[in-house]
Length: 305
Image (cartoon, rainbow, N blue to C red):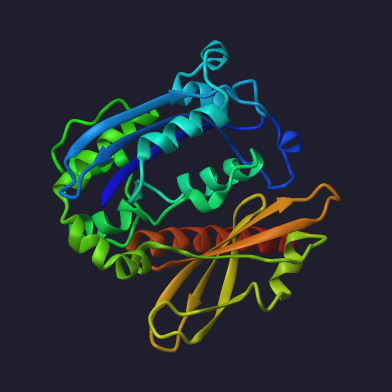
């Protein structure tokens, strides 16, 4: 068994209304594939790097360009996605699995394969290194930035936000972990780190209407599996709220509810549940204190009238 450490960069639509909606909602179009091939002992065998000329999002989003230093001129010299992926697939060979740093690359690859009419079943077993790193190194139940992970291991990081460089950094981290054990226990590692995410199928006229949606406001405790209700919705920023969930077993959770506006001016909601920790508890209490102060100010103004 060989391992392909994969990282990609992708361009975004310059405006949400310009996003491709069919056959998938294309949040990003891949413009660079970088990869490192490892043997069964996680030793480097080869590297792969290709720039891609996009078909749908042909002008670089300013934020992506600033982050990746990829320009519109660079894109002109890239390969068409179909040819780039054909080369990558041939380079990968057979009998391999994919390693990534983060949860985004594989869904993005799947969407791009679909949009270009390529069979998504090509994607083999995949493992995100972050949960393994968390269980073996940081042990905090939190995602860790790639540069931070390299720093914690005392490794000089490659220049970030380049697909090949990020793949090389990830491969370096793999060599410092007990990957055999990490992959063997991946289900338990993943359970520690993956937040419980739910996209409500309902459309809401106003964001506040979602507070009465029972399915959006209930979830199962990560520890005991009992049903927990969201309590104390607090505004985090416009169209974003946080809440708290307290289970009978004593476990607390932080809930984030994010809204996006549909084209018909209604809202859709995503709920994400995180295990409560000290920093999340502090953040929630800070927002609660701000809300209480605002309420007190309003009451004082009413009293003066």
